[in-house]
Amino acid sequence: MASITKEQLIELLNKDLALEYTAIVQYTQHAGVIKGAMYQSIQKELIVHAQEELQHATILASQIDYLGGVPTVDVPPARVSPDTVTMLQQDLDGENDAIQRYTVRISQAEELNLYHLAQQLRNILAVEQEHAMDLEQALGK
Ligand SMILES: [Fe+2]
Ligand SMILES: [Fe+2]
Image (cartoon, rainbow, N blue to C red):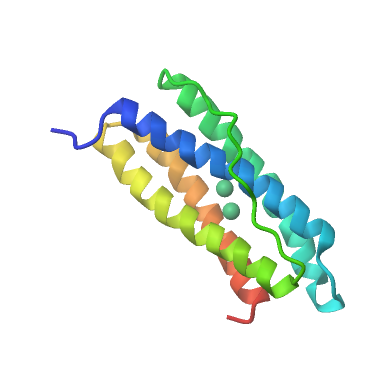
């Protein structure tokens, strides 16, 4: 017996979708205000991240609709800071949270035999891991 229902999965995917919206807002704001010559290349990366988060949101919205749910328009608050290193750490925290959530979400989708969804989530997860690597590199981790 599945330990998760389709309705519960839709609810969780809507939380993921909301946090993708937040990531778009946060990356766009951070890319706009980031200072310092040594952060020029990560600034460009943040703009690319924002665009990729929009692709994730689009995929999730269509999957939620396909499952019979209504895609959310909630946007949880983004994290901001006047300090560049703090901003990049906030972005990395968001990515690590996404990696954890999508790892769980893939098993939940497979539990419900939703293999197309699971594959889409795997693609998203791979991109979030790239995002985390970019940020770790910029932070010298
Ligand atoms: Fe994303
Ligand atoms: Fe990301």
